[in-house]
Amino acid sequence: METVLAILLAGGAGERLAPLTRDTAKPAVCFGGVYRIIDFTLSNCINSDLRRIFILTQYKSLDLIRHVRDGWNIFSPELGEFIETIPPMKRLRDDWYLGTADAVFQNSQSIALEDPALTLILAGDQIYKMNYREMVDWHRQHRADITIATIQVAPEEALQFGIAEIDPDHRIVGFEEKPRHGHPTRSVFNPAMVSASMGIYVFNTELLLRLLQEDAQNPGSAHDFGKDVIPAALDNARVIAYDFRDMNNKQARYWRDVGTIDAFYEANMDLIAVSPEFNLYDNNWPIRTRMVQAPPA
Image (cartoon, rainbow, N blue to C red; front, top):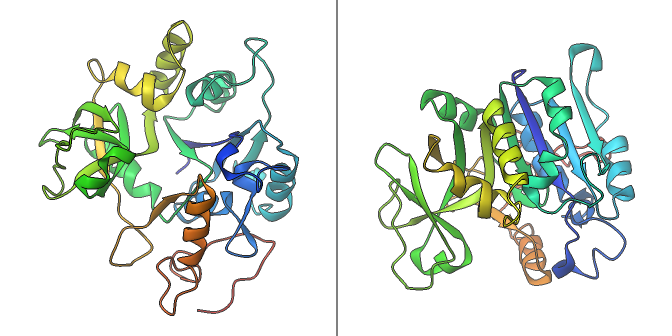
């Protein structure tokens, strides 16, 4: 997908995952034995034929940068492919990144130089298998300005997520952050469930750069995609929901944000059952890195 630029946000301190993040960034924490957390998002990119990738780093990034250098040296620059780790350069102000949107905003020049038609925003600290190509195709099919990946969760779990209100034509018309009233808006994809934002976005790049500029000029903003940029765009942009299709090929859709020690432990336990809930060794959607050779399926 040569018209798509992927941006992985990998600068979080991961304080709730301490002490595992004492000396390294959360995306560089080992997971499933020989892998790093970031390997899962990068594998999704490669399996989705995305080969132009920026990784935005910040917190204790040396280990992460070395892992990407040594484990992901699989691209062909002569074909226009790259994976670049970009440290915060204080290009626009003297502060470090103030939020997810600010991290991308401070790299606006790098994005503009690549001139992608679409920009895919991803988190580098989640465990899941997803075909981003399908999401991009959905974005184009629905003539969206912004597409947000959503996952179906049970209504009683809604208070853990940002819940999208979606029209029958899949347009997102509202968000409710961690609703506690017990009556969250049901999903248009499955009325028995609710649709939670996964923090994965496809933007028309021209609109993205404009929205980031407007957000940067708002002194009351937290400069976060989910809290600020997306809600501000709902009235004036066509924002579409994409229902997550799990390439893990299990009965339940698998997506984990391993943000705490308990969540990290439980996700690791998902790997060791006789029939693991998350399959590391699926040759149809492999977890890739040159630093290891996966056992045969």
